[in-house]
Amino acid sequence: MSTDTTGTDTIEAVRAVVAAHAGLKRDASELAPEDDLFDAGMTSHRSVNLMMALEDELGVEFPDALLTRETFTSLRSISDAVDQLRG
Image (cartoon, rainbow, N blue to C red; front, side, top):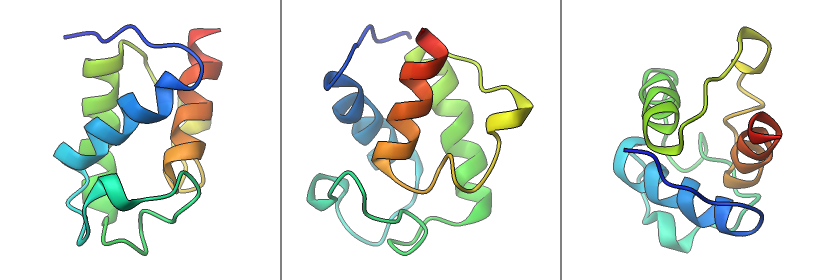
């Protein structure tokens, strides 16, 4: 399933995938775009699951250069990466 989003909609699309796949200790709807997802309970294992779900649901493929903790630290960092990949 691919969700077509652009601009500010990307954060909300990412938030929905995070809510379903990141295993957070708090509700994803309460997160500010810059909140640290690892501080909110996401583990390294969950970040891999999240990356695969983002690829499936948002129609992007993360290159090796973006497979870093920094890319998956926050809703903002993920949405910036998604927007970059979409060009």
